[in-house]
Each structure stands twice: as structure tokens, then as C-alpha cells.
Image (tube, rainbow, N blue to C red; front, side):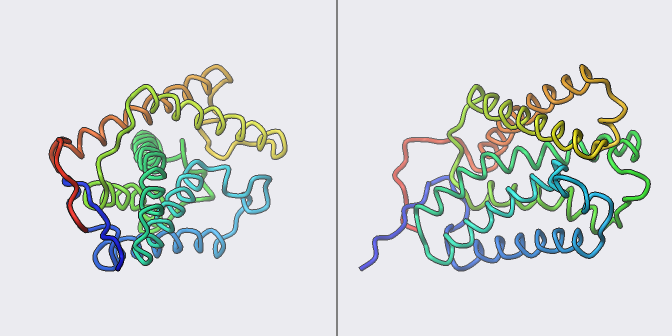
Length: 232
């Protein structure tokens, strides 16, 4: 007889499960697959450049979101506690990053679209939403409805965000050394010191996203208490 999976009392819906949880994660993976397929079907200069589309934080975030949902769906289908735990750890990285991407992209786009999108790389609105809105929305649904509360605090979050921002900075400069251009037009407009401040600011925003998402979870689902786990 299989041991029942114990669910955190604040978790809204049954997960992992082969019902709603599996459906949400399948829909998410279908959206992510559409986004990656668009890159293949609509090649541009980035396809031929060093680093491919992984020069874009958007695509790095999309890849991490995809990995999160792949593990989540495998947990749903297998009802594995270990995979469910792994999904929740990945979510603590992917959800704040995707919220950061959405905030930066739509915020800069509202100021001037050419800060984030070169003239020759415009996206149709449905595709734009698929890349820059749907991943953060889907990860929020997973967090608020299908996950236990996060345990990460601000200091570890700022450390994690700083490491991610630093690694991305190094990666972008490496790609620039081969390609002679940056993927985002705003990087071309900024001097080295200004780009440094942009990456530092992004790390702080991403860490703040973790705190805000924890607060949002508590607002929607309630605050953690010493309650017994319930059978899923």
C-alpha cells in the first residue's frame, strides 16, 4: 500500500496530482514549447550569433520555467514527493526571475520599445505575451494554488539573485566579445558603469520579488502555523 503524500495545510489545491495540477503544468509546457518553436521558425541574426537566444534573460528565464514545469508534471504523473520538493526549490528561482523579466520588459517597453526590442525583431502581441507575460503568470498560479509556502528569507534571496545577476553579466560580456553587439539595445546605450548599476538593481528587484511573492502567498493562503500536514 502506497504511503499518502502529505500536503501543507496552506496549499490551496491538491498537488502533485493527475488532475488540476497536471493540467496546469501541461498548459504551461505547451505555452513554453510554442515560444521555443517561434525562435526556430523565425530565425534572425541572434540564431547565428555566439550564445544563440540564450543571450536574452527572457530565454534563460523561459528555460528555467520550462525545467520547473517539466519536474512539476513528472511529480504529478508519478506522485513523487522528491520531484515535488525539487519543483518547489526550482520555483524559488524561476518565479522571481520571471516576475523580474516581466517588470523590466514591460516597464522599459512602456518608456520606449526600442530599449528592449531592436527594430528588426518585433514580436506579434500574442507571441510577445507568450514570452514576457505567460511564464510569470503560470508560475504565480503554481505558487499560489499548487505549492506549499516558501521558506527562503531575504538575505539568502539577495545572495541567490546577486549570483544569478553576476553570472548573467559575465555571460553577456562573453557573448559581446564574440558577437560585437549586446542582445538588448539598452545595453548598447549604457556605459560599463551604468550597466553594472543595472545588473545590481536587477538583483535587488529579483530578491524583493521573492519577499513580495512570499507576502502575496500569505495574503492569499494565510500565514504558516503549527498545523498538521494533511493527506493529499
